[in-house]
Image (tube, rainbow, N blue to C red; front, top):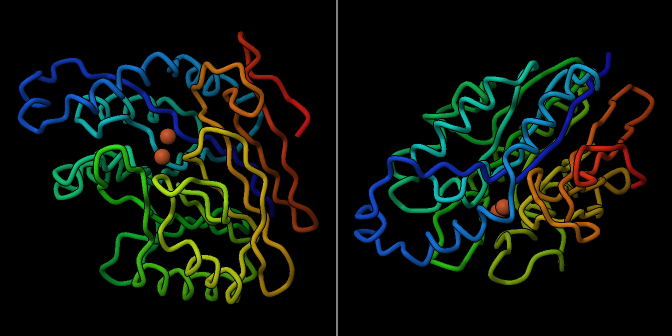
Length: 286
Ligand SMILES: [Fe+2]
Ligand SMILES: [Fe+2]
């Protein structure tokens, strides 16, 4: 039994068509709109299409997206994301990022969950939304949410004590079943990766859960750059891998658009990195 999956993040697909300017003014979001428009020039959604077209040749079984699928968490953006994800030739699992819960209103209305529920189909502990678990060929993919609405120019995240307690139980239960455990979380979880205004505020508590209950791999996004770190687990280091934005047009090393492909055979966990070279994604040295 093995799973071959593709990890991409921070695709930030932009579609603000049909959104009244008054909606931004009413919410005093003009600064945020400027940010979104600037963001619109640093991302190109066609790179996501290019990745989707490679899936059959790559032979992956599942596509994992670790948050920031939108920019301002508005309905037209979620509508576009929903349509794009439905084009995937393989099942998709998503978790939210800070941009997917940009405003209190988007959190209150559960906009991310209502548009993208079909991509978060999994098992949950009683009455909770997160974490959720997707079992697939000897692997448990565990989706954690760090998404909270934060103040303008802040991009912090929080898992929360209740969700962390549930994560510990899920990690134990899936280990007892002999499953490989892949944890998806939007924010980096290792000290020093994110600045204070970008940080996961309960990163230490998350690290304690991994130290006690273990995991085989933690995948994240958020920083829009390649991150290769690890956290201590009960039986050695747990790899923690972050990818840059999957639609970035940056040509700075480490910030170019990329995605990873993982093979989880019982005897190994192998990763191949694909990086955008200006016209296509190519396998590249890690
Ligand atoms: Fe992002
Ligand atoms: Fe983010």
